[in-house]
Image 1 (cartoon, rainbow, N blue to C red):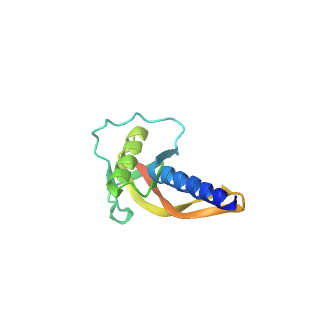
Image 2 (spheres, rainbow, N blue to C red; image 1 turned 90 degrees about the vertical axis):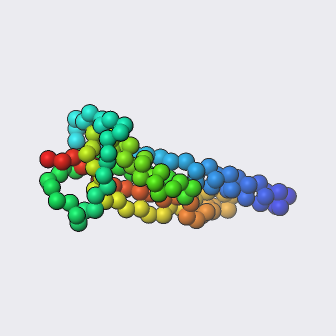
Image 3 (cartoon, helix red, strand yellow; image 1 turned 45 degrees about the vertical axis):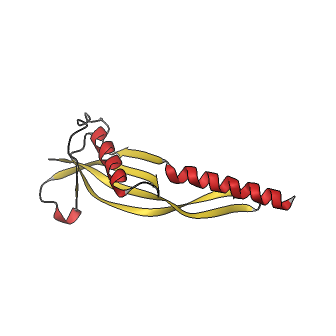
Length: 128
């Protein structure tokens, strides 16, 4: 009996981890009350190092991408750029990422399944 429950729990954790590791969640946090017009799909959104910025700008919001480890850095950067275009941004100012684990409830409490996701954050800016 205990063996069957343990096997089912391991299968559930494996499936949950695989599903969570594969999906992407994009979140925008606007800092302005009025939305800006989106940029065209082919608008080139640069990612600028905060130490190398040489012109005036305004931060209009934050973009976050929470992605499974199966996604490439290029894919994640494109999702950040797409979200910035939708916000009406001209560029992204730096970015950081941090690993995220997943906690899965079980009969004995919570099972931590380790580092399966990355949370990427950047500032959306417009040139002034």
